[in-house]
Amino acid sequence: MVERVRGLLRMAEDPSVTDAESQAFTAKAAELMTRHAIAEAEARAERGEEPDAISRMDYTVAGVGGHGKARVRALADIAAAYGCQSAVRGNNSENTDRVIILVGTVSALDALRMLMPSISMQMESSAKFMSSSHVADIRELRNYTRSELETERKRYYRSFVRAYGRAVAERIREFRARLQEMAAPGGSDGSGESVDAARGAELVLLNDVNRVREEFQKQFPQLRKHRPERTHSAAGYRAGYRRGRQAELGLDTPVSRGGTSTLAEGE
View 1 (cartoon, rainbow, N blue to C red):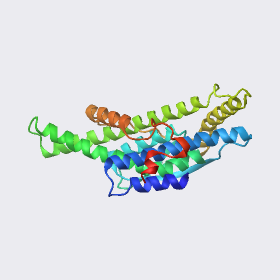
View 2: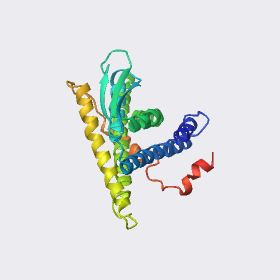
View 3: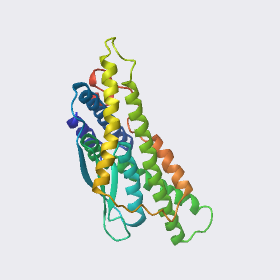
View 4: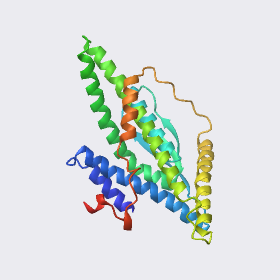
């Protein structure tokens, strides 16, 4: 499964594929990783094994100033949807990259390690295109100075990125909740075994959230909160949220029969 996901992401990042194809490959990878994590929790609960271990991952986020902060906020929201907690090192105005420190289960971090680069690529591509279009539109309205247009482009871009991350995170949470509901009581064959396994998986997943929170508080007992963004573009935020809700993440596609998919067959 991991090799299949890596193969899909390699194709998603291939410069020769179209934007739609890139999103489709990332979508299938995200779906496989999410389903795998839920299935693993069910299997551990069924076997009576210990829950997934808690670990830590450092992820470098490119960009300085407001652009870097917006990317950090978006990726932190997405990581939280996978049950992770995050802190940021170097989140200031200096000319250095930021590092987002993620604490979560091993399976969640494995998924994020593979998926965040591709999701970031989609987010950046959409943000650049939409902010350029926005500036081109407002240029026609009145005589903006070059400085005013650049300021508006930055405000729009940053608001778009933050909203995109929030929308993607919402969809991931909704999808994970649906997968848990699919494993809920009702699918039993009469013996009660599937019911017990589903309940056990649900308890494992809920316990993961608490264990991650406790470990994060141990590692980071005193954290300063993010300072609010000084500038905000309502138009950029609306566009980013809408695009994030529409992004191809593979969260609404049906489960393929026999472990194959149309995408995989077309490889």
